[in-house]
Length: 146
Image 1 (cartoon, rainbow, N blue to C red):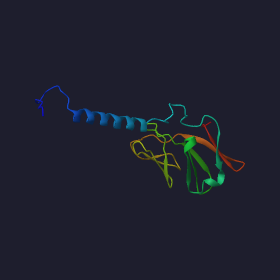
Image 2: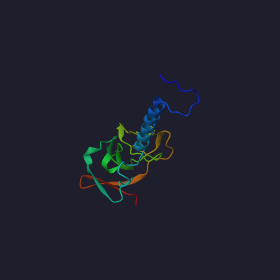
Image 3: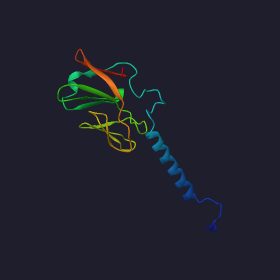
């Protein structure tokens, strides 16, 4: 077995493999923080009114996440609807988890209140962007804020 003196410029196999493994993990982390995963083609918020589904899908005091549209809709106890973009204001990741009325960002763990859009847990500091929403013919329609 050949010995390599300390400080030698010859790279050891273990060092090269460790570096390659770390580079691939770093790349995975960057991909997870991309805004949409399709090269920037999906808008962060609807650019036109979007029919999200039946009005009955959002219970009083609850919320529903519409992942494909990047929208969350909540309904107050008095029946009023509110809608917010589900693009995290910290790093632009799509929020993909709704537990009760709390939205969680998969990238850095920011949490938001689906009823108000307010930040519940950092690192995000800005609230979610408000969207217009209405019930029209028994359907929920959300779109850009007028």
